[in-house]
Amino acid sequence: MSLLDLSTATSPDHWRYLAEGGDTIVYSYIGPPDERFLDKVLRVRKDRPEKTEDEDITVSFHTEIIPRLVPHDYLVDIETISLRRSWLETLYALSVHSRPAWRTDSIDFSRTSALLVPNLVSSPISIEIKPKWSFIKDGTAHTCRFCMHASCRGWSTTYCPLDLFSNSPVRVKKALYALYDFWADTATQNNLRLFAGGNVVSSGNLLSTFQQLGILQSSIPEEELRDLVVETLHASLVQTKASSLLKILNRLQRTLGGIGIEGLASLWNDGVCSPRLTTGILSLLSIKASTHHKSNRPQSQNGGQKKLQYHILSYLLSATFKDCSIMIMLPGLLNQNIPASSFPSRIVLVDLGPKPVRRLQKWLDQDRDIMQGYAELVGKKETEKKECVDDWCISK
Ligand SMILES: [Zn+2]
Image 1 (cartoon, rainbow, N blue to C red):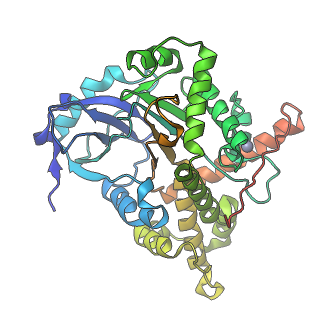
Image 2: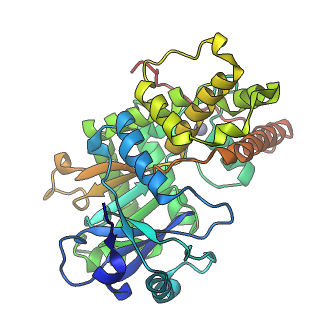
Image 3: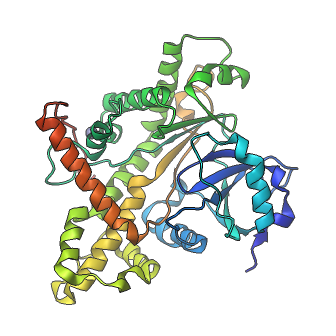
């Protein structure tokens, strides 16, 4: 099937810089009315020193693997389109001034394809939350990975993912306040991003943006605005549809994580690794995904190689879910005119790309650094040992 050529169908100035993450820059369509691009955004790969997977693998991962694990309602459809280099260069040149100053990387101009996906920020308000690890690993003390990481990095936040994923509305609200405050205090922190009227909004511009867009009619004190945003998010996340998604994400992170990165390292060190592990990963993932929930663990007679493959693939899948984001689309702010039952308009998982096997060593190093760094901080009494509460049972 031939791909739609965006270079001939649209001009680079029909696309406006919207946002970016570590791997992609996202553009929204602002050209003449065209139903092919209505409410769509273009995701273009950045030029990374560590090359990410091909787009077709990403698309296959999205269309063949992820839907076996996550219900379709919580996913977005993606389409691969083709591009010409000169078109891409003009697009990038037009958008350079819109990027945050600290972003110094560029688009990968060697790519001839990109992804067209629904514009998830076309709602009056859209909020993206990157929740991170929602459980405590076996064998670690009572502190979750995010809280240990935050202490080691000196982040000033009280956010704990286990609060967000808890069954307690009070704890969910605590997590949302912490996410909001972390976002409001830290310009480069990305556990929460807020979009209004199609654009990313900073806390400093929040009130004026809401007023310009007619989302808020009058000025309100900063504290009241904070309460209103958190109450709106809270009303959205305690709805059945949203809480079901949190449960699914939590279960996937836990169950697919399996023996953990340290467990993988010990298998690896047993000498059962092989370069073959890096090939055919998609087909293996496919087998894995089709059998994951009730799958039997590999039989020991299959040998160490198969066992290692099983655990690596499972871990790579869990890594995708540990790093993904939840996009919550809202009809506005909670008030008498919009009943709580209308929130959220939609909730989906995004950033569900496949993780390359070569990152395993980096994750192992990072995990050890965090564990060791946190133990030292606690040992020197530079931080109080945090007790995170993991109250979700896998069987739920
Ligand atoms: Zn925690």
